Image 1 (cartoon, rainbow, N blue to C red):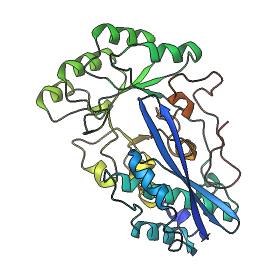
Image 2 (image 1 turned 120 degrees about the horizontal axis):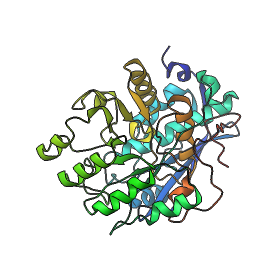
Image 3 (image 1 turned 60 degrees about the vertical axis):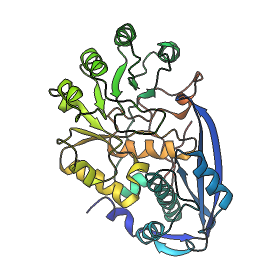
Length: 354
């Protein structure tokens, strides 16, 4: 039986939904907005978090309100409800980026999963027959412009066991790279070659690639440019440690990669729907492809839900799912360290964050 088959026939009763806006300044240097969908039915509630990156899309959604409350009200199976969500235009104004449609679709699917499980009186792990495991995590960081070791040192001074996923940029100097190597704390590097028109774009830079690939011989290499000849040659012998994130929205995207991957980043929001996500988990398991997951600067329940899924499907990989306070410019003392202890709620699809 497929993973989604274990969930598809869950009954769900929906009365409507409300929206809650969240906002915070995060470590990548931007003002993060997100929107929590509170899906209600039968006196219970399910939650999901919209992690669309463009602030205008959140403002438009929150100003429009729960325009689909009537269409989404009624009694369904979870599979039927997900199909109904997919048939609706969830954006009152066209989104700035096409991928945002997937993010918002996941918001409603995850809220529905939470509500259906709450109404059934079951936690997700029991429904799937998978025991939650401690979740290994890394902290994802950019080092500023000009880049410095300070963001790493501040965190390691409080949390000496932290591991990091870093975004190399052309401004990284050999001295900075040497200092990073000396920390012994870098598990992944993300070249972000597939982003365009964002604040994190990094054009292909063969000098940077050579310095980083040689300096971190055991680190995973996420989203490098393997097409431009000058960077492709640097990576020619490194394919077994190349992973992919930005292009992965479906099984088709995994199959379309330039070479069979050993590891992929399965972000639930980027996959964009519960049936598709479950199918991707099953596909990777069947084909011997490792998986990990990444955060989207969630401010509400979305981070915990991603941690929950990681605990069930890929707990031991370098999940970019550090507790959300690590995204602050100056993370406070007292945060949990890796691996995160399992914290599923008694019912539903929620991770009980300390």
